[in-house]
Image 1 (tube, one colour):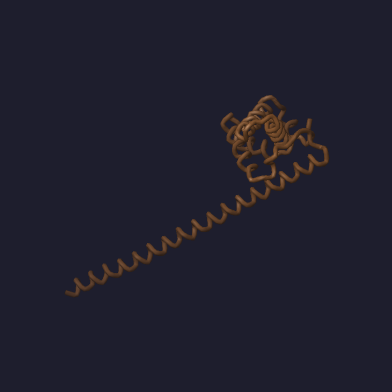
Image 2: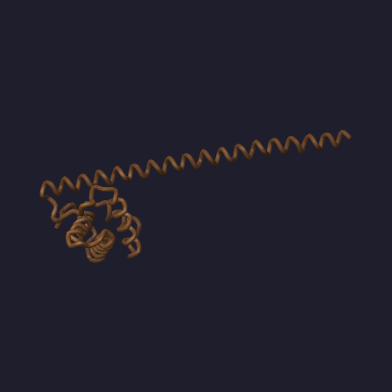
Length: 157
């Protein structure tokens, strides 16, 4: 009889401990998910701020007559993020490595060239998707034929 009571008590305790552990595990997973979500949101905000700063810099260069081309009308809108992602996908699908693709989009000289191509295409009546594709193909062609050190210099041709 004592053994039966002991076994029932042990089963009951294991049940309670198991429920507590399960609740703790669920809370831990929720906390980790929340942390990852917050970090991801911070990264997106940081990237968006960086892109807005870069767009402002390009606009300033254009207003100082240092730029050589026409920027697209959507340059300062939320479409710039979509444009960058689309061009990045074109670069990656063309065999350009991750770091080199990022470098092409983050350096002023090749990035301005891509924007000027998009601006010229827009002036000629091309759709936004055609502008993206042309800008991406332009960067691929630049990458394939250019001396990379010169491509990433701060002097625009």
